Image (cartoon, rainbow, N blue to C red; front, top):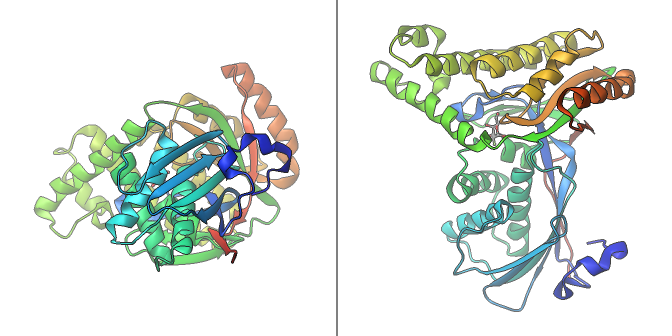
Length: 389
Ligand code: GAF
């Protein structure tokens, strides 16, 4: 890894690190289809051109591993046969991956790894999936584990579910590994069937506006939303056994259970069913170049997330509202799990600079907080290079 200006940052044992495997693992955006993945629904994500970079080498030992994060200037070591949950969450994404690889009966040996991130943390662009998938992909290559791309996606998701304790769906890991440059994925999270739609935004671009807040309730509320959806499915299944997720539930079926479900639960389910419909419409609009229609669906998605799914926050709502009457912004919505992070905006390219200044100023005035502008394009999924010694 390049570190010529900054050599003093490396712990001594990482100086002159000769990489055997290098990995570039991207963050992701999601155009539409939020909180639908764990309900077996549809999403439209893609990887972005910003990444986490890894360098791997085998070491002499059978089971001792060392990891250094250049981003956090933090070093830790662990034994492959004896490790437990760490205090820092970023370490748990990695340990979770090791745990899942070992559960598959795959044999690892001692290795060293350096990690450097270009992804802002807590911005909702899934630095966690990038970390898991890049790490899993690197180990797969270094130790010839013979895992497919889909194995890497699924074991990374399991690492997050089982070791980190977040009940995330599959979207982030899938986008990080499977994306193709200049394309948006239309993913059916039930069958994992994929369609790659050219990311042709004509005179527009995608712009992320980072609220720079990440409210602490995010993780617990995420798990609660998922539990609410699952609870509804369990009730509906009593009459319709074929409904194993909200994907198999129609508006008509949901209506039948309106009085039996808690009001909020009914509201959450309505949002999910409508969001799945929006993704279907949005993918058609994207394919036929109807960008204004696409943008309108983004606004509707935000409204559902704000009022029915209730995962937004004042900072995100302010940003979306601020864009509403600007005819050069076609669509805007919160992106990812919610309670902070970024909005994603479809905006005419030549207005980006002027608009960024205007909204930054207004946001600062309102919340006394700086926001960040992140311009993104649809990038390639995980890239792995091997270097023979
Ligand atoms: C987070 C999760 F990790 C995803 O699986 C997805 O549910 C998303 O929130 C909401 O759409 O990024």
